[in-house]
Image 1 (cartoon, rainbow, N blue to C red):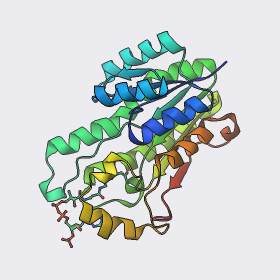
Image 2 (cartoon, rainbow, N blue to C red):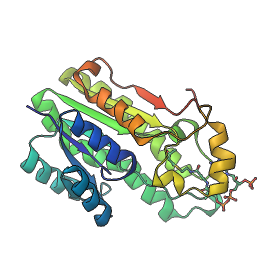
Image 3 (cartoon, helix red, strand yellow):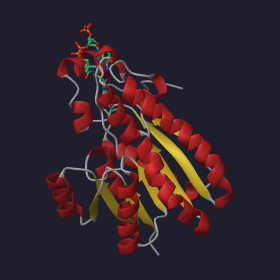
Amino acid sequence: MSRVAIVTGGTRGIGAAISLALKNSGYKVAANYAGNDEKAKAFHDATDIPVFKWDVSDYAACGEGIAKVEGELGPIEVLVNNAGITRDAMFHKMTPQQWHEVVNTNLTGLFNMTHQVWAGMRDRGFGRVVNISSINGQKGQMGQANYSAAKAGDLGFTKALAQEGAAKNITVNAICPGYIGTEMVLAVPEKVLNERIIPQIPVGRLGEPEEIARCVVFLASDDAGFITGSTLTANGGQFFV
Ligand code: CAA
């Protein structure tokens, strides 16, 4: 029987590549998205992966969405917490709204989703949770006090939950992508990207979404059963922990 996987923010960018890679590895995949109906429909039309709309920063909406996915596909065995946003600004210009939007999605979103699949994973004695953090949660990034704080929080969440899940055969791991060629990164001012960021990447290029997706497929697999609480960095050599 195919396992059921859900990918938040799973219709665009890194998330779309993860959804597709899991499907191609035999999972029944649900791709969640928050807002862009047009992109979600195009993704569904191209891949035949069912898409489900809700905002991961809303606890009640996550509960309703998860119930719908489980009703259609079956109990969720693999959760990929990928949904993330940026609201970059130098700290002296950052508004409380920019802070809260990023923390609510990129950190509280992990609580909202994981909390509502956790009991089922414990009862069934199997689960895989993969959290997509970021290089900028490891090293900090100017212009991203909100994002760096939330992504660093994701790593603490991963390590704490890994200890709780271990006895129930639930692994919880994080991946820290570096700069990947998605809309999020390409939204960075071109001059900053070309003159400040790419020169800091020893392999000399942005990463590809599929390079992160392959890491997720591995961490979700039975082969990775002894790996939990870990942080897998995939950043082209830009930063070593
Ligand atoms: N690395 C190095 N230097 C950076 C930088 C970065 N990532 N971002 C900004 N700077 C530098 C600029 O080059 C500039 O330096 P100079 O004055 O010497 O030219 C200085 O910081 C101020 O930048 P701006 O003139 O652009 O100032 P601003 O107030 O107009 O904008 C900003 C500030 C919104 C932070 C804008 O610079 C920006 O968007 N920077 C990119 C921040 C970033 O790296 N975001 C990552 C997004 S991708 C992502 O988050 C995915 C992931 O997980 C990796």
